[in-house]
Image: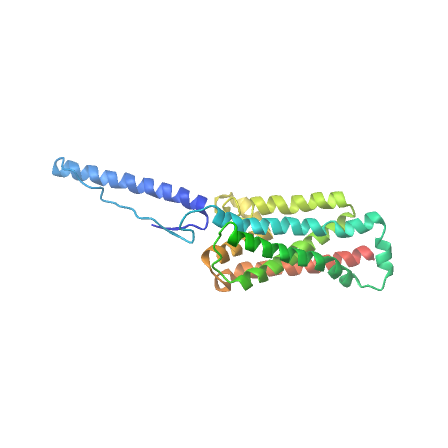
Length: 258
C-alpha cells in the first residue's frame, strides 16, 4: 500500500483502517483453508506492505511547519496594516496627509512597503528555522516559494489595509483582523484539519480562504518538491487574491478621501 505522508495524521488513520481490513480478510481466508485441509498450520495469506511517500518517517512537524508559516503570515500581515490608516484617523493626522500632493495610491504604497519588507524578512527567517532548527525538508524550488509568499503577503497586507480604511478605529480594526484571518486560516485552510473530512457546506466556504491555497502550495513545495506544473491552479487563485486586495485597498482609500 502506498500512502501520501504529507498529512501524517490522516495517513496514520488510513494505514490503521486498511491494515485492520487486510488482517480481517487474511484471517478469514486462513480459517477457511485450515477447515478445508484439516487443521494444518498456515501462514496468513495476505501480507500487507506499506510504503509512505513524501514523509517517510511520518513526522507531524514536516507538515505542521509549512502550514504554520502560512497562518502566521496571514495573521501578522493583516494585523500590522489594519492599524495604519486607523491610527492616522485617531491621531488626527489624516487631514495633514490629505492636504499634501501625495496621491492616494502613493500613500497606500508608502504604508505597505515597509511592512512588506518586514514580512518577507520574516518568511526568510521562518524558512531558515524550518530548515536548520526543525529539519523540515525543503525539496522544491526556493524561488517559487518566495515568489508565491510575496504575492500572498501583498494580498494579506492589502486586506489589513482595507479593514483599517473601513473602521477608523485601531481597536476595532485589530479585532476584525484577528477574526477574519486567524480563525479561518487555522481551521479552514487544511492546516490542522483535512478539508476532505469537513461537511460539504464548510468545504465550499474554504474556497474563499486564501490561506488554503498557500498551505497547499507550501506543503507541495516543501514535502513533494513539485512546481507550477502541479500547483498552477493554487498559484493562479493566490495571484487573483493578491491583485483583488491591492485594487480594493486603492479604491476604498480613494472613496474615503472623497
